[in-house]
Image (cartoon, rainbow, N blue to C red; front, side, top):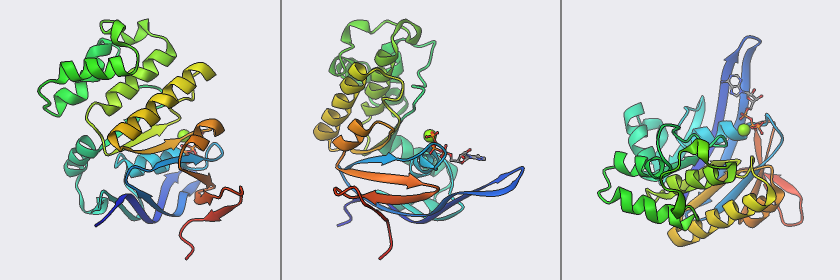
Length: 236
Ligand SMILES: Nc1ncnc2c1ncn2[C@@H]1O[C@H](COP(=O)(O)OP(=O)(O)OP(=O)(O)O)[C@@H](O)[C@H]1O
Ligand SMILES: [Mg+2]
């Protein structure tokens, strides 16, 4: 049985810039098992968000292959990729990306409604209670604090029971208290729903709570070992 949530082989991403071609990812290999939690650390500009976007099928690689739940992404057209995202993947953006004109409850309901889930409203209410915001259902994003908006984004990310949750600096804009609260929630939901978690973070404390720590450095990915040495992934 295939027990990889994500598998990546020789992934390269090159973009055209005014100064010529820029290779952002230089041959990434990775295998993430179902239910695993993985932190990706690394300096600004090293390619972390680029990798996350590719893994979530939001972007297309220059070469190499990605398998999401055993399915190669290269064979899919845009429509099929969108369907796969809707079915299997959620993304928490650093900037929350809530819809300003929708209430908290409506924001969380939205993906469930799009996916045709019948009891979207009740499910959204339950998710918001789960993240401690059941008393704010009618509030709009502008009326919520940064930490509260982040928790709405988490409720929204989990409402369709994603197999894989990608989060780009989910605690990046939060103070320590709220960062801890958000992290507790991510790991609780990860445990309850056996969701695979892939987090990009600069927060070492959050990274250490993950089962695996990876380091992105100049477009290459390294496995961090417990003895704090690192090894490039895929050199077999
Ligand atoms: N479409 C693009 N065109 C040109 N350059 C790009 C493009 N996308 C990303 N880059 C460059 O690629 C590098 C990696 O970007 P990326 O956003 O993946 O970094 P990051 O590791 O997420 O950094 P940060 O920690 O600051 O978020 C950066 O130098 C960025 O400027
Ligand atoms: Mg980034």
